Length: 143
Image (tube, rainbow, N blue to C red):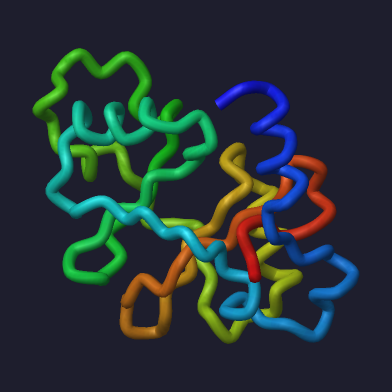
C-alpha cells in the first residue's frame, strides 16, 4: 500500500472521538477487527503474525474464546527459540470488562505502549480489544 492509500485508509478508518464516548462503555468502543491467536501459539507464530502488519500492536492469546494473555512485539525480546510457547511471555493484563466506562478503557489503553487493552467479561471470555488512536483523542476501529 502506497503512502497516499495509507493516508486515505487512516482518514476513512472509523473512530469514536473521546468527547463522544463519555456515556459509552468499553463494549461500545471495541475495535471491530479482533485477530486473536490460539493460546498454544509459539514465539515464531506470534512474530510472523506481527510481521504481517505494522498496525498490529498487541497479540491476544485465547483458548476457544477464553482469554489467555496478551503481548507486544517488545515482550518477545530477543528470544531465539521460535518454538517456545508465546504464553511464556504473555501478560494476564491489564484487561477491562465490557461494562466498564469507555473512559476507563481509554485510561488503561494509554498506560500501555500498544495503546490497546483486551476486553474480557467476568467469566474470562474474550470479547474484543479497545484501541486508542495515536493522537490519544479517540478510539480506533469503531463503527
